[in-house]
Length: 73
Image 1 (cartoon, rainbow, N blue to C red):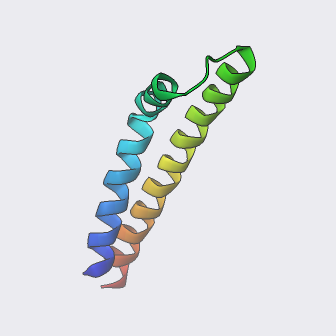
Image 2: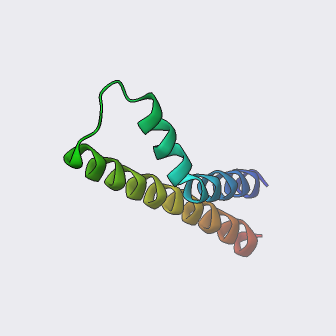
């Protein structure tokens, strides 16, 4: 039962992180203390990819936990 709850939570959090990754990076750019040049903009684009990738990996872990709970019982 606990695996299903944790899996569902990870699935939702990972999905939200992957879906809102561009919003997270845009907010970070707004509060960034320095003006961004080309290199800083490219770094922010790579951060957006990393946030999306990690969000998808967390969602995949949630799916794995849900499948584990489904086939274990």
